[in-house]
Image (cartoon, rainbow, N blue to C red; front, side):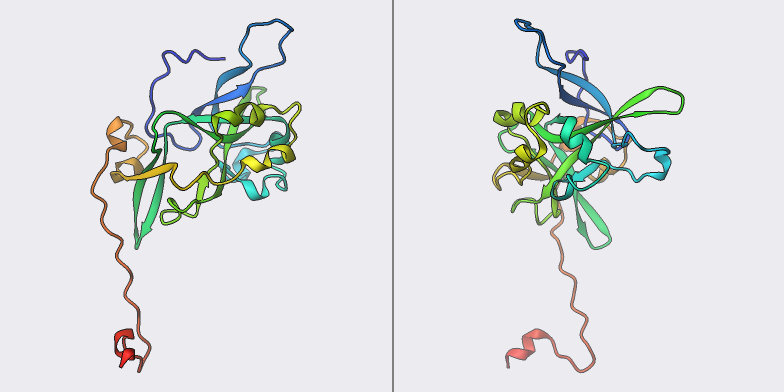
Amino acid sequence: MIDLEPFPPRYNIAPTQPVLVVVSAPPREPGSNLPDRQAALVRWGLIPSWTKNPADMPLMINARAETVLEKAAFKTAMRHRRILVPTTGFYEWRREGKSRQPFFIRPKSGGLIAFAGLMESFSEPGGSEIDTAAILTTSANETLAPIHDRMPVVIKREDFARWLDCRTQEPRDVLDLLKPVQSDFFEAIPVSDRVNKVANLGPDLIERVEAPAAVPKPKVLKKGEEPDQLRLF
């Protein structure tokens, strides 16, 4: 368990860096007043416990909700180590030709939300143990689909206990939570491409900028083909 009071705000977390997560606490004795949840810092990028050499594994920062029970890397964690990843928002990029426009995606109501996550502990050859995590994703809702086809799974406050309860809630019991959040939940704020550099960490990264309008690519006509407008005549 870590002390949350001095924990600093972070505006640009990159894969392999530590992220704050919430885990279910070990079973308590009857009458105990200790909390049933704990905070922890884990590496963003899940390493399955059976991995021999992490360098041979792809960087698994996300897990697709549609196939999480089929993938060997995630199915054990889905059964035994479900976590919450608290956040105030996330970044996503929209491709515009050869460039990409970043957006800060945040809840319209503001405040903290929680993504569905999975955790695994990996024992390094030297004997030390490292906790790692991945965020579950699902198909994008109507608001985010023009930016990207995927989005993190949001676990609502009323479902926190059920998602974290790996003792009585089997994976099939929580699959209904792995769905896109309603279309009016998020808003997308265009931000500076300074977020593309991990060394940039300040709160200015989430400030709105004027995003250029997406310009459609001109159609390349085949030989002898006329523009669509002329086909009306």
